[in-house]
Length: 256
Length: 260
Ligand SMILES: Nc1ncnc2c1ncn2[C@@H]1O[C@H](COP(=O)(O)OP(=O)(O)O)[C@@H](O)[C@H]1O
Ligand SMILES: [Mg+2]
Image (cartoon, rainbow over all chains, first blue to last red; front, side, top):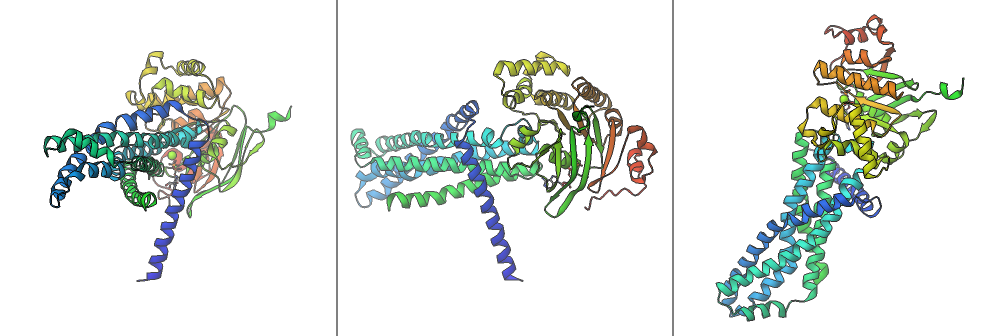
């Protein structure tokens, strides 16, 4: 076994992938900024990414808020700190769980569908056809999806935060016997703008990552039906991992 | 006797293209005058599609030169500039219609985006091109998945014509169609070439289609054009390779494994 060979080869492969993703990101971002803009496609993506993801994100955050209230209550009663339940629910949701859960759910929904759609267009030569009709696929396909995703995720997270907090409230008031006004007071009293804003910034970054990975894997998919499957899987896996990694980095940047 | 009559509409000189270390085209040259039609035949995987994708600007060339009307086309980094500068039409092997759009929107797409027409003008032009290829107004509202492969190719032809190209590249326009539909498509292609004096490069391995469409036929083998001539010479050639391919004999020098 030639250890140097293996290490060298994998390093080169890794650098190649990183290089390709960097070039793709650069082209994608500049297409988002420079005209022409395709407004109709962009609005369609807003509906697709924002509106149709609402049920998924809503359900996820609702039950997460509920379980958070339940679990933190169990924990906090052990040292008589039940009063912190509402605060913990609100802070965990706005800072971490809202953006991360919404990000992961949307990655499964939207990242996968973007990758499948674009790789199918690649395999069936529709991307080449766009070029022969003088249309840049980066501007026509990729930019609207990325911009829509960047804008939709914070909106989804904001709605998700509210629904999640409401879930915590439901459990707190109807199951754990909190007084409704007290619970709401405890929710808002320690909540600061930065808690919500940091969550929304995270969401925007996650939105970018989801669309970018979907587009990248779709655009560079292999040929044939297998290429479409691989592209879809890779898009979801890579964006999920990137979401979790950047989430840690952003938390550190915001709060340390 | 003006100069422009003698400048070929399309001239391809010593074109080379590899993928990785796999050489696909190693020396392809030909020229075409206005209104003429060249058919390039060759086995599956011989690099026919790669050739016309290089000519159209979808792939960059490794080496060589392409001239349109005597003007050398450099290989811009951006394929869109390349496409616009060249004014080529391209009809894809599997039609490559946009399946998120209906038939009318498909045909109007190029008029809208390449010719920058407004919505109504693009629509009118699309209807005109659709009727030119014999597709009724009513069918315009259907989606590509609603119609047969043959009709999809007819629509792809209309979509290509709608950007008003001088040169059209056809990637296997009749492959996979029944004999009647093939004949119908060939008829339409000929009609368009003649009525608008378009220059056409068609690649195919369908010999009867090649005989119908070509003023001139060339054969691509091992990355180069090994033979070219008038269709009636095809079956009388001295080249064993060409004779074998044209007649479909199994015995002969033709290599079926493209180990290039
Ligand atoms: N984008 C590409 N990357 C790598 N190899 C390719 C690419 N396109 C075509 N090839 C290879 O080039 C060869 C010729 O392909 P093609 O031109 O499609 O053949 P055909 O003559 O049947 O149209 C094939 O071996 C194919 O695998
Ligand atoms: Mg081909």
